Image (cartoon, rainbow, N blue to C red):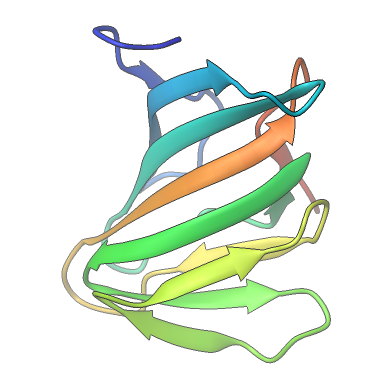
Length: 119
């Protein structure tokens, strides 16, 4: 579990930062829950990527365009929620002129990278 030490994931896009708040084994065999904050500078994007499990998110500040493979892009604002299926290619982009912040919980396969970039 990450408690007092906050971790930042490596190899992130400029203007985008993911910070792990908590990482905990779950009762579901081979799964862990990871809570994180994603911060987007104005105009920044996370970059296309996947997760080895589901992402459940909440927009804390600003706005975000969420692009999920096979679905139309959706513009989210502070107070909106979203869900991304396991393994689905997606990207989040900040179209605004102020920072955007999202809190997400990932329910992922233990031992796999939390995010895998996709070209």
